[in-house]
Length: 238
Image (tube, rainbow, N blue to C red; front, side, top):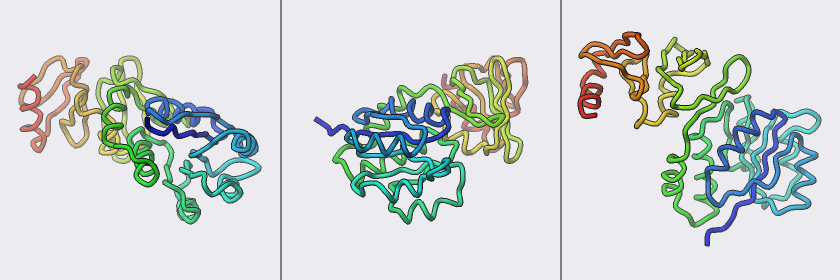
């Protein structure tokens, strides 16, 4: 039987904890034993429970994540989570397993889990990834200063605006600071199709197509020359 990894989350933002709680639920053998809003709560938890791994925010009131990390048992490993890239060097100086920059995608979270597994547990990360991907049917994106959950089946298409993207859904449109290449990596290729350097469409929402464009929700979205061959091959094979 594979070893159970006992984890705690430490973050003063409830939505940040909720995102990681959802991610951890998808991974077998990783058990969340506590979700804490500050370092003092976390300190009490690790003194009363078995804890193997901490997902730790850095920028917290009263006691920072870095200060807390220096005070705990070195056998407990840490994956730092933060919105501030400048803390990365300090995080790695403490021999953290990984350093996750918010907003944290599921794919990036999984990379951190695999790093932990590679150095601690004799288990096949590839097999875990395959099992997890079957369950993952949404992403979180930052919009209007909060993390917003978007189910894959709600997305119509994604439109790039340089360093920003618009995510058009069935009932709304969200703008987030992200590149289209990054968002493409977070969307399952079985459900979505890149048809242009500025557009990704939901395959299920395609109403019609020609050699020049795809129609989604009555909007004609162009197929660029560089994507045309792969797009038509995919669509004509459906």
